[in-house]
Image 1 (cartoon, one colour):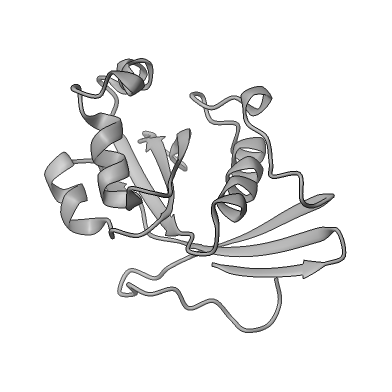
Image 2 (image 1 turned 90 degrees about the vertical axis):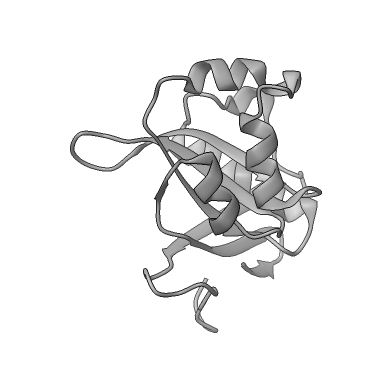
Length: 154
């Protein structure tokens, strides 16, 4: 992730992985043990996947965060799991390694712009550090495993 501040405005650039079909065993091989944001989506017959949930994993990292979200022994996420049951799920991730407040700002922007079915912008706020938040999303190429965010621009 790249961040640049100008007065009371912040500009983030994030690099998304490709979408992966959700399988609990494969996800444990794919996801890094780094802090970041997961986007769960529903596979669409045609067109882009429909965003269902934006989920931040700071302390536990992406791998354990998704495992805990989908684990039936974790009652904290029962409502979310019930809504995901029976759907053809996809996921993608981006690493956010700067601070929990930066993750909160990026998640706020993503939830506001994608309007996921299982997130509510009325129950999620930004960090209140900036007047305006801007996020540029990039996609990693299929063969990339490391972010290659340009040094110029957002």
